[in-house]
Image 1 (cartoon, helix red, strand yellow):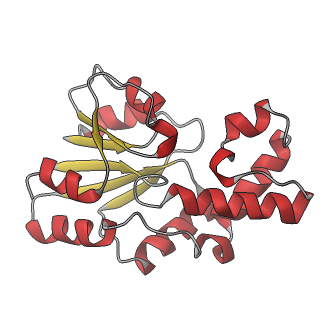
Image 2 (cartoon, rainbow, N blue to C red; image 1 turned 90 degrees about the horizontal axis):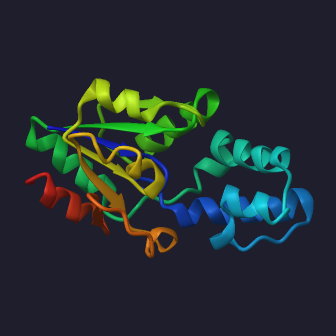
Length: 190
């Protein structure tokens, strides 16, 4: 069995990332942005930051170890990936938008948190997840972004949306919802 998972929002707790972004906006630009609203679309549409400022903050949050090390893991992820590894015949591949130095930081974070996985692939912001998923043919794909999963609905993959406050009210047909890694273990038959 092959499970492919997004990194941020499925393995790394989104709340800790948003907190870091918020603190950096205040520190770098003197702008107070509530962590729960610190998503690219909201920040740019409300003219709270420029695209350049947003990218600078994200570059630091994802690419400098002093920030990455403060990211929290989703509860139960370390235990779940270790259990999947011990089971045998189940592999986990991680997809993420981060590349280069940011991907190196992600790998270091995964190692420090004892997350078992076969590979991590940085696809970039405009990466083609759909083609990548078609080439790997996973049994399960997990993401926290409904828009990513909607684009994959016609594929023969078990699609799972990791539940967060920011995707609660969004109905995604043909997609299962999971609240934690225990749910994922059950679906994987472990």
